[in-house]
Image (cartoon, one colour):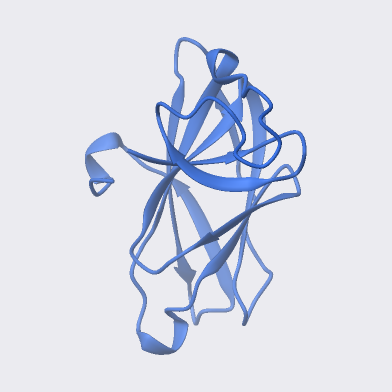
Length: 131
């Protein structure tokens, strides 16, 4: 499964569920005390199909491509999700909580209305494409 990590050194990188150290600094990742946000970027027409930037608690977590699904590894707790696009920075910024009892939160991002706002909604696991 493709996962995205952010190390304390600031490095953002893709790995899998077995990744346990930062490839840049070698620091162990605290994956035992972490959950995940699975984010699905719903497909958009060609003019709006470029990558969206992902921010968790105002910290950049890289980009997500059109029709891509990825797991973002985050500490347990409540997190603000913000997704941007080259044409807009407007997003509804939902708050998501991950806990040991509910370690994965499922979200989907898409353009709302005429494409001036990005909407991030909660989703059910069965609504998510395979990673």
